[in-house]
Length: 541
Image (cartoon, rainbow, N blue to C red; front, top):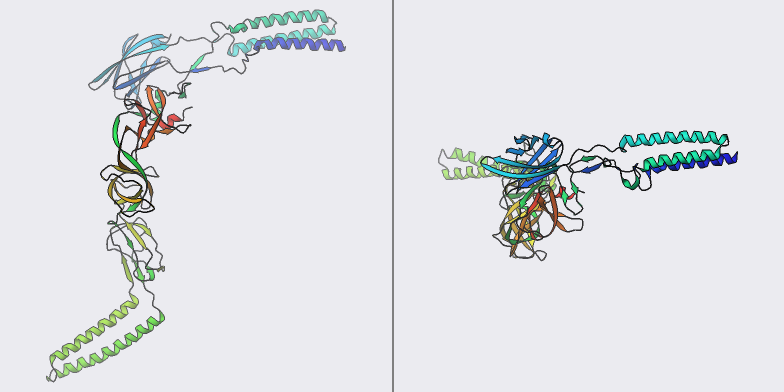
């Protein structure tokens, strides 16, 4: 019985080995990708003004027309195409021109002529497209291969049953012969389709074409026109000029000394709001407007002195009043001169004014008024708060008149263009106002006025100032957004070498102003570089 079981085990092992021959060593079809990706059939052409890309999607021809220099889409053109079926006119939809292409159904080599008309401007662009012929599926691919493998498995299971019955009936030798013969036959049938990888003319996996940005083995980047439209890629043609050398300086926003001011109390006292309340931050105030009141505190000894002075004034007023009354009676009899009566009345008037001033000093606070017109930039006000003479209660700033103070270690050119960049990305133009003659931390303070809009800027904000020096450099000015830092730390630009191809160019740069840098080497004039969307191109893997 043990011998029969051993024979049965050997036979099953041989059957399993013959089934494994279907997916022979080194060709595991279970892990093999069933599809291959490739770009759609396309062709392109360019002139001095336009760049055209034609992409064949089935039986539809998609046409993309852009400005050659800037890569801006052209969506108002008339495009006529000379096709194998005769001249046809493309229709525009969402900036993409489309044309029915039934002539491309069977594939082949097509020479097309595109006539692009915009107003009085006409360009003729020849384009060649090679479309592959349709391919049928493989005989042993997909579901049919798995169907064949299923039939093979059923046959092996049937043979296993036969072998088991034969072994039970002591027919081991005959069974082994039948088993080996059947296994060899099945293995040979499937080996015909795998020996030497000869799968026949239909063995190629079906191609699923797709257009997706991808980095090429040579380091360039393939970006189809559809993706360029989504990423808003823009370009510019480089030109070399001579520029002043730029000096990068640390700076901060300050207020114009003629358009700003502080509000402080001359005496210590308690703050109280005006009838409309304290002005809020950002509120507009006018020169001379009352912003707060300060009530000086009265000490006990001061109050005693004031009461004593008030009593003295009351006594003097009483004496002078009686004198005036007596003079009024005597003036009728001409016993006293009228001049004495006038003097007494003047003295009485002065005593009343002194009493009123004393009473006013006890109850009327000091009014704090705005020295200039502007916006409340800082406020330190709470009702009942003690105000000190050396504390700033309000700071008023005219937001339309701001300056920049920078520290420089080398002379700057007063008449050259200067600019500043804020941390929020805001770039402003500056005009030179003057430099100090006294050093500050071994540097010279320089003042600039902000030209144009001051939106997004505030006093005390730190900025980076780009001032021009006397030295000059020759180079290519490019936007700062065009320069990206590569993984190796080098600065790179992306050159638009073909309608759907971009290549990295390592460059050496120097600061120029708040919006541009100067490329000293690494790229030649007359090249198209990416000025918008370079960061997005750099993310393509």
